[in-house]
Length: 597
Ligand SMILES: Nc1nc2c(ncn2[C@@H]2O[C@H](COP(=O)(O)OP(=O)(O)OP(=O)(O)O)[C@@H](O)[C@H]2O)c(=O)[nH]1
Image 1: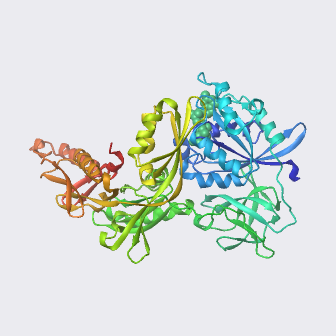
Image 2: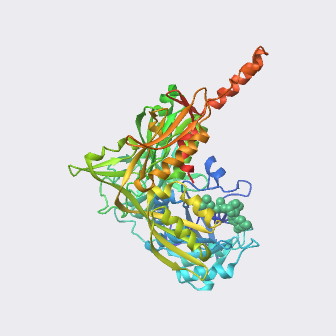
Image 3: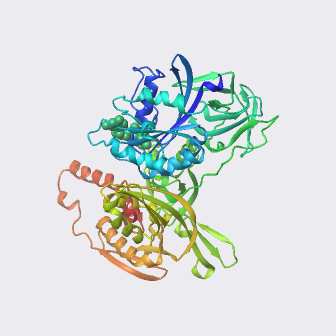
């Protein structure tokens, strides 16, 4: 394919601004899929994605578009919109020369619109602004157009009006892609230099690697290597991506394609890595490769302790197709054998839990999530703290450091006061305040990651009546006075309920947690004392009174089947209960920490 006829582009948008719907329309218009094949949100092909309405993994697809009688190849690279998956967005962007910037014409510019836009601008992408959902009665295209013009410094006529729902503006968008986005550059005679921007796990064919070639040519059967991992492979199959894969003999600079080379586990493939030939390798890897680090850690335990091995098998299978999931075995006195897992964020954690339950039929308990702290030990070494049980004794370390983020919040001017207040409560320091328009403000804070990952976003939405969006990036680690807060049930520490909290908040946290647990722990035949403690010092206490009646008492002498039914019912309720010492604790209790308000 003549490079001049290729256009590589992605779609960037804030979550729910209609990226997937619009992508579907582009595929339909270019007849990449027939109307019959068309399912809503074709690119979101994981069940879970479809149900949650979010794009979890990015995908790529090739369209052929007849532009004024001249056929062009348009490679569309779809990107996930959620902050948990932002590394994937940045790699997809790096594979393109242009981006459609989709902005909901009723919502306007939001935090991720800006973050993704900046990423695209850093990579010198040509930006095509599109106002979407203009069919909505609440759409204000002219007002939002002003916002977009301010943001990217474009002219009014550069902005395309569209509705993914009704199909308006689709042809204008395709024409703009051909006219405004530059053709890829590169030299097909140079040594091979291709960047991996995604990988897809296929249980039958192994891992399919998606790549963009910057220089050189790859042929079927070539001996290749991945520069950062150093692993070597044969290019068993290469091709381009339509709705189905189309195998090719060779692909050269400027193209986007897939590679199959017998890789069995997703972990071997690192997004951002460079593919080159073993003989005649390229002199430089593609810039910007990073190992993605987990941000949130939590324990996952089987409810039924005999299912530990089964859980291990399921986790191994999950990891085959989710390279960002990391885990290692751990034991808890309260919960037995389980795994300490690292996730990209809270959404990622929820997705893993749901997949374990849905795809592997496991019932699991997740423990209090935590971020990664570091202790500067007396000997000058750093010790990583991924779980409260890793916290060293106070006399062994100099201080604890916690991760801080730079958070950007966009909200309506009316809500600036409450948003600032919320951020201060969460130990945030305001760094900047910029009016994007007369009515919309961007606030920048330095905040501890630990305060953001839990319920912060929900709170932000509530206080701003939905008119606030959030994005954040990791900044640095700063010393903080963190303590380990333990919870005891009838005098026994329940390690799975321990948490690392800031000293100033420990009392409040302990008190609320005890109150919450009192609501959640069901009454039993004896009294239960719930206590919160720092070290040996108890800082809060609640009591769950003993139950008066036995459930079976009322069945005394009654029909045996009724008795059985009652016991059955109890058993079901127990499914998510865990015996801790002599106390039964429901799953919600382990997550109570997230719901302290
Ligand atoms: N009225 C109207 N609704 C739309 C339009 N485009 C999308 N929607 C709706 O907006 C919601 C979000 O659309 P998606 O296409 O899933 O948005 P997205 O940006 O891909 O979302 P993520 O993949 O989660 O980032 C869905 O309920 C769509 O039906 C449009 O042009 N008009």
